Amino acid sequence: MKTTIETVNAEDNPSVEYLLDILRTDGIFILENYYSKEKIDVLNEEFDKVFKEHEDAIDILDKEDCSKDQRIFWSNQYSQPIDDIFANDPLLVNIATSYAGRSPNLNTLINYLEYSDTEVRNSGAGWHRDNHHCQFKTMLYLSDVTKDNGNFQWITNSSRRHIGYPKPRTESYNTRYHEEVIEEILKHPLCELIDVTGKPGTVICADTTYVHRGNIIKSGSRRAMTQYYF
Image 1 (cartoon, one colour):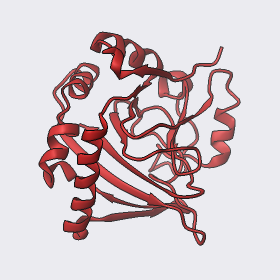
Image 2 (cartoon, one colour):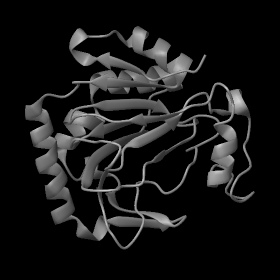
Image 3 (cartoon, one colour):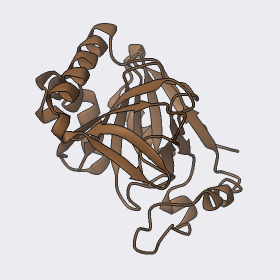
Image 4 (cartoon, helix red, strand yellow):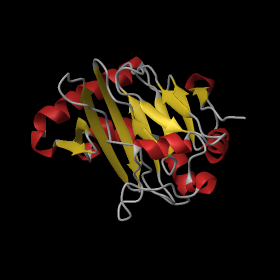
């Protein structure tokens, strides 16, 4: 039986223990309606402000014949509201601390992805794991995200403990994979590609030792924040 991603309504006030149980079993869960419209409005204002005031910090990733999203790391150091509302969110930090077994450092990435008819674009380049052994992060959608405008894609049961070490693009960079390797992974009876879509305020909590990527954008744009815990 294939595993799907469990979606939890944040308005039901799920406990940390309940969410950790899902995370330890599936490696991921989705929190719907986590942030109010008022908080999303504040974060979007700060998103625009940081991009405007810190143009020198904008990084445009260009590899594996895709990506090209605009991104700024450490945005929590440029914006107090981003630091207060998202980076130091008590529930999310509690989950990260409990899952990793230690208090993490915080690095907030903001990124903007826009469709182009002249080049292939997504967020984060091709299929990959962030690490083989231990990595956790959260992602927040600041705009409506569909399968057309660069949603997060996830392969169930694709961590090292499930499928070992797939053939990498290069031996020295062994957490990234060609499309043909992904096709082989998806032949595994427990591995399934899931498109994670959502409204503004949707939060994705994921163990990124599982294989994932940002989908290729086909139209429109996408705004998101990613919280790295390390």
